[in-house]
Length: 169
Image (tube, rainbow, N blue to C red; front, side, top):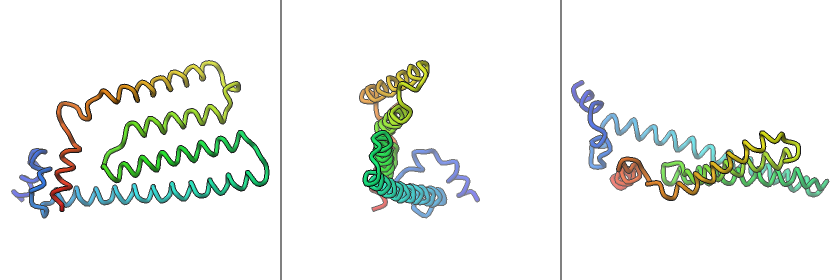
């Protein structure tokens, strides 16, 4: 019981140490949760891929039967959104982090798709102004992201994760 209390009360730096005994309870719990999280991300990737294939099939069938430019453009933009989400999941699986840049890009394409689908002339001017302000804020986030340090207050979780990953090998 004392060992369990020591393990739970151990400082964060000691918990992430790659040289730590891999049989500790905390390590096994964290490792199991990471595996479950990876399994969820992989199942999302497979689901997104299937949806993309079905959407492509639908686009090709609509091209053969009738040519509706507005609907086909919306479907193509939807596939691009799915591709970007797929890329976001792949980055997550590779680096164990969510990319801010890709997330913002997906959001921008999603907003533009909605504007195209609804039609700019059919939307109230207040909503157009709000959409423009939102897009400007997202663009500023993309620009500011370049100057932001990768982490706050000198904490670098990617470096710790890299050390932990090297310790597994």
